[in-house]
Length: 253
Image 1 (spheres, helix red, strand yellow):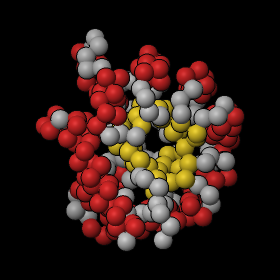
Image 2 (spheres, one colour):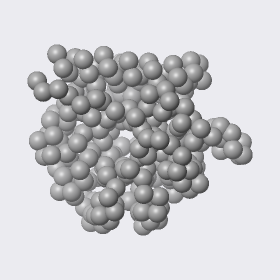
Image 3 (cartoon, helix red, strand yellow):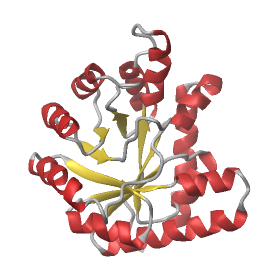
Image 4 (cartoon, one colour):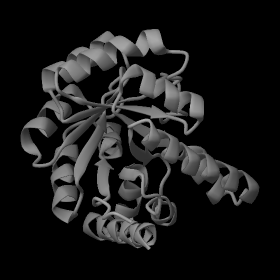
């Protein structure tokens, strides 16, 4: 097998901003946490600027772009407002995600097959500006083919259904979801797409999915922020990187 490129870890800082916004003010600062995450081994930082600004704010995005020394991945809905914000900030990458005001976190992936007309202008404008575009989708063939048809160079497979089934010990469902992820990664690679994964990952599930050689990047936030309360950010990012490396070693075997 050819040598695999290193598996990247993107750390999502949204929930640090959630804690800050619970009381207002500036503490804890998601930009400071982003810098600490990079120092601890993160390859990039992810932040989701939502329509309602429930956690990350416009100033956070501008400061992240200006102050961090690694790539910024701007999660966003495919709206005129968010496309304009991304074009103004010029992050390294954007990940287009579905967004509903009533959800606590992103629930499910985009419908890349049926939303071609809505998504195509955003993908075009962002790519034209030199920003890497990813679409956050379920690992279903129709969605992966829809992403390829839109010309997005990257997909991020939604791992939430698989992770939920693992945590709740629904073994048959977890196995079915895992097979979708495996097949989806292979299909995406065959269509020339770079494959990322994220949502709900912990140490064990991150180690497992890191063994898929097609996966080039994991984006993880809530679990890392939660575990950092107990063990500190340096430790949890180091532990996550170790889990990813164990999984990657299996991919190379």
